Image (cartoon, helix red, strand yellow):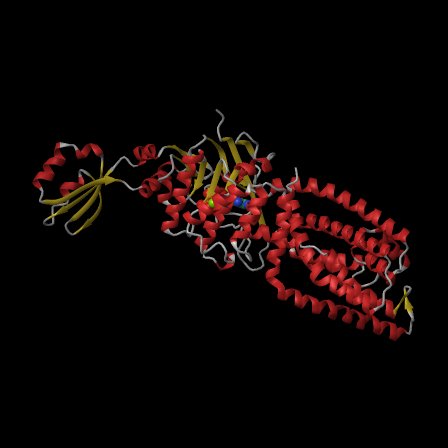
Length: 266
Length: 332
Ligand SMILES: Nc1ncnc2c1ncn2[C@@H]1O[C@H](COP(=O)(O)OP(=O)(O)OP(=O)(O)O)[C@@H](O)[C@H]1O
Ligand SMILES: [Mg+2]
């Protein structure tokens, strides 16, 4: 039996507690504007230097729009699972969580979703609306619907992947190296810093078959109207299957590591 | 009737690492199995208040975590309220309240009341019950001025008290407290004890607590002592006193410096200061003719007989019964 009201209360308490860091959000908002400008400066130089009008089918203007959307999209699919679990283990709070009538993994995901919701409302949504206005994007209701579904599934996938990564921190003392590597891999494979179009055709083909593309590339291209519905639907199917598979693996993996766990002293 | 806690032959080994060498670049580590519990068996019945004692590292917290389903025992069997803590952790946690030292469940950036409200939802406590209990504990532990302030601004003792309240609001049948009184001031320690005693009387709640504080032990009906993962004592405080503290403390004050040598044969002199003498003596000595003779002859102006204090008794328990260290098992 899932403790629904308990998990929902946990979700709300996390949001309330995160609100103590309002100023951090203001800073992140500024970064959300500066980061795409930097990426644009890099790729703009390449466009101008090579004299190409399109790279991988993207004009400089659509590349600009891509980066301004990629930042809020990754802000929405991002998660805090590793930080939450690492903190719980280091401070010994995991033991206190385990004496509550709730599933620990589910609780972690609810806490992460609390943070994600704030990111979406305070950062991603304003930045997306800004980009949509600046780049005059013509959105249809079906595009928006697909986009939202993509975000949810992309986020679910990342949560599960990072839950597995975080459980490794029970066995490794330093998970930060792994965390950063994972972050880099996600950034690369999801197209957050390099649109997948820029890769050679063969590589691009493989990357599109991976669920990571649902974390950034696919939702952004959906808003830009540059992928077909068929492509989006097959991407969603792949990600859903991958997520389900990983969720089953994560369930058994958690049952295994929990037994090995030393928990924190005291 | 079934026992509230039934632990049979439980062992727990941790994989631990030891650094070889202490240099900055010595990364070679040796892994070995650290035995934290070594075949522990015990039972606790409904309504009992049991103090779990033992030196640092004796295995108290490990045993408690196994009872709560946080740790998986290497071998042996555990039943708490008829449930298997590992397999039925969630069902069990609805019925028990656990305070694990200073490791907070409180939201650091929010006032404690938010954590209390969270617990109301997590345990599904009816609103009226919740309000009544909350009011009771806020008054008892003097938390009225505290519970609406951000937890990070509270003192250690205030945090501990809020932590205690958050763990007990759902009115559990069994309460397990791992060092609940760290950093708590004397009046509040007393209040915590009152809360425990009242809950025991009103609801028949069973309590198991670990502590290093002698006064906490006085409210226990029974004492369990661990040493190096073995149970070295299980019985009442009375039994502990008769086994390990069967001496009376005799204090004498003289009008002039006496001949202390005469007293050496009566017992162990523990303090001499001017005309004051304190000794530990066998109760039999106190009724002996020799002693009464000394009393009447010696120029004694004051005379007191008391019990040995509990910390002395515990020191002796650890020394006399202290288990031999189990050998670590090399592991590559
Ligand atoms: N995760 C772990 N890995 C390795 N060894 C551990 C681990 N947890 C505990 N131990 C060891 O097991 C032994 C028992 O620890 P435990 O925390 O149960 O002691 P304790 O009786 O609660 O001590 P204290 O009074 O200091 O709280 C100690 O020697 C400790 O170092
Ligand atoms: Mg301990």
